[in-house]
Length: 166
Image (cartoon, rainbow, N blue to C red; front, top):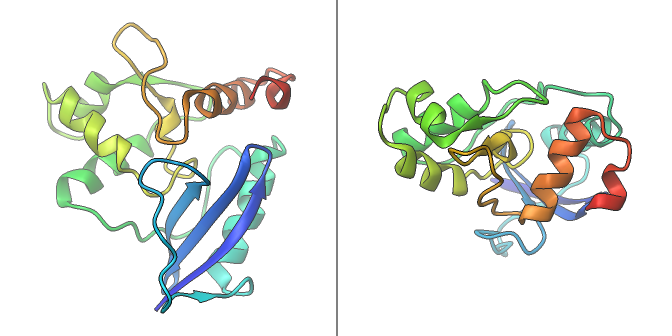
């Protein structure tokens, strides 16, 4: 059974999806690959993973949380899951390139494939794909939009004007 709820973030409404006891999706409204809520999904603000996700996201946006503890249940291919796991190793406030991400995922020389898997990350922010940058350090691609990517990186770097920059 899939459960869902909505969360009002400082950067727009987010759809939170849980599969059983794990979080399977966190999507900004208008984000690329945003799923359609299906009729069989159940909206339940009291479902434990959704409550925990909202609490942890509020702490993150408030500058109080640097890593997430919620159990995750993303759906993807084995390659995608290896890339998402590697993304999760990037510390808050740091960035790495797609080439480095491919290396960490055990696929040296597969930066483009790692980039494609990054774009399909269903758990934005919590699996921090906004911390992956181009080979020259520039901001490239983000399913939630480059303005949000820039704002999230500013939040993590401690720049105080985060919300006005988004």
